[in-house]
Image (cartoon, rainbow, N blue to C red; front, side):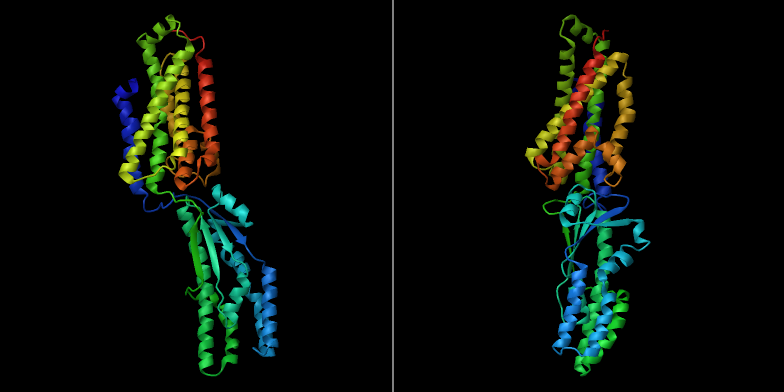
Length: 432
């Protein structure tokens, strides 16, 4: 193929993506455990229990303790007075997540668990914060009574939003640290009081502990961090290996169109027409040659990334069909550009495609940086060849299967059909 003899084309399509993957991979390795992202963090809060039921349980526990003589009647009344002030779930919403400074970069929505996990899988939110059942009840008992019930807030982060996920984690950690500090202060107070035989008077200090709970920074409540079940985070090397590969394969389409004009200039095109080969055969040849070159190009880049950075592109059952459809889509683009060049009788279409379209497509498609938090770019990029392919490869790297990228495959198939059909129509009747 002519493409394999074109040194300039080989440098652009093979060497440049390998070099840029290396540079960008190292440059962003410090900030991308998954992929770095920008903009506002959106989280879903899942309440596994009922705040009203917890409040009822708290009051019942206090009444039962008084009935059994564990606390005196006057102490019961004092503790009951503390109950409205210990709605820590409301404090989380109003004082923490609702803080004016926090709201500048974080928004939340209360969802049920299934809906939240689905939104997380679609990349619509940064993380899911799961407040466990009996959260208020157990926290109050830990704080106000001589009990220690386990309390665990779970944060499930999307593997592609490491920076924003870390931000959410830090905010929740501060909240749980404050609660834990109050529990430790309570335990210290009660232990000291019991040693001095003034246990009943210890409860008189609980109100001040509750009011000052956010001024102490000691952690005891367990804060568990997990990643979306069954999914893997994306490293900077993985992200940019894919991003650069799907960007630079677009040059194969423009190069193929450029060769079409060369065929006109050296009379190859005229000889084909005189031989009655037919327009379809001409474009079928261009389509097949560009598709094969793209397959070779992507395979070489995959091998380089695997050998240099040990990057796994995903299960072969998903990677092979995606790569084949991607190559076919590039072949379709080459047919469309070739037909426009033949109609114009020069390389203007190829030059505009290289100078403008490839750069724009790479930008909105996510080759330069993740666009998940910019809805309009994500929507436009998902309709481009490189944007759709990027999404598909990243999903496979994270552990998804072929069925999970059906939408990506459909996009590439539609692009191929539209480009090939439009290219054939535009070039119909073209003669030297």
